[in-house]
Image (cartoon, rainbow, N blue to C red):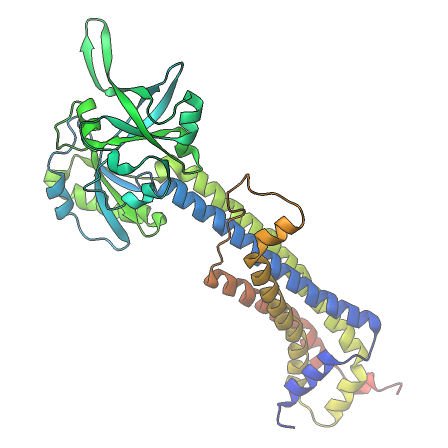
Length: 415
């Protein structure tokens, strides 16, 4: 026998078919509970990750993730010099000029409040972010002086618009005061195309050429509202924003600039998603915890059945520490096997989740054209599996200690 004694006997007890049927049922129930808990946690967290990732792409992929703007109405004229003077921050993939204002779009029979965003075809490093979501038209037609506009499909549906129609854009930011009051800046634009992000952006944003929007706001031709940053991970915007604000505040020439990030507008949405992920994690982790407690009851029953065997081992000179490790191995066997089975099942179900859902007759195309979004993160999955094994290990400690304290004289008194 080349195996350590504790490992050999512990695995032998784990694989043994003899003994109480009820004890065997409890052990199998604990193993199945851990497997189901791990599988459910992997599948649910992968779907939640997928939804969060879709929100990142559909909302944060288009709106500015971090902006540097001025409090003055004249905008920033030396934006190239400002961009070159900023420190290089890790995770930043693009810094672009932008023109952004709130306004109203007027169709043939109704008006809608919108955010007007300027687009610079020759400067937009992240233009492919919007290009991927164009469903009608081509962004190359959005040239200076033509006063064209791209609008979201939902907004076009609400206003009854199709490419080729004209709309009127009104912006209070470029208005002028007259004897009749403030007259907003306004101009007619031609609808050149549609985009679809499958989010609220589709009904709240229009995209026009940046120079045309600057003219509408009565800014200098080369002036912009500010600079916007895009990141590899939009969640890095808050940390970089704090560092950037400190840098700008320490420089007199940029003291009037302010830094804002996407959390000011969409922070509550992503906070709610993160809270939901944590709550789902907690509830499903309780399933694994309950299964781990079943290991305790199963081991206690095994110890009761094996009292005679334990006493015999002790009389043969087996140390208490070896007895302790025997039952740790037996309980840990259920945890490891259950976690690995749950891992295999979770990866399989998460990979083919949409096919499984379709096979049982549930149509999810209304949520997304490709069904449920699934994003499996190796670190997260590894944490789930390791946590399940650690819970199983903790569940074995008390029963194993009870087994090690077995008195041979008491156990063999009536044998």
